[in-house]
Image (cartoon, rainbow, N blue to C red; front, side, top):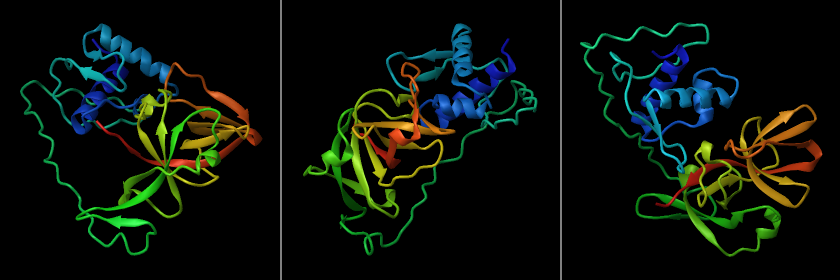
Length: 252
């Protein structure tokens, strides 16, 4: 017998897996269940593992597998209930399984190259060459990387206005946000960011890091997306935003 929260989390994970092909992040699960901390998600996942509903593939990011659903549950699309609502009763076993709609891609056509400097147009998809500043690591300010000659081709449709650059990610501090070691992140250059955005932050004028930014009064918290890494809380004058994450590229 599952608790209400265990049942809601299991159905949410199952729906996310079927819709995207990978399990949701801890942040997404926390928001879907209206919980205040990720520790509650950890407890729910552990309980579902013990009861045989979930299987966790260790040493892999975002690797949850739904092994079974509660008896009488069919795989209908998940709808998150408001905090005070009671989850709808499961339909009887005889109810027909709902099939997800067939994938219909949205295609945007147009001339993306006319006003974007540095754009190269291929046969179908216009691309922009961005400077690739190397692996984001402590002790190397972004300014010190600007003499690099490396470039990377990025689809023009990924970019908005302003200047952009690319960085290769080193480490696992953001795995629960879907950012893995070796990924290439696309950064929109700027010195401001909204609360909760993932940014490239320069600490004390010399240390560069990719973290989620939270403002806490006169301080700034740099939050990792990995339970094994600690949140850093620093005076605001020690942190300078150098850009915000707008995209990610990955090679398999």
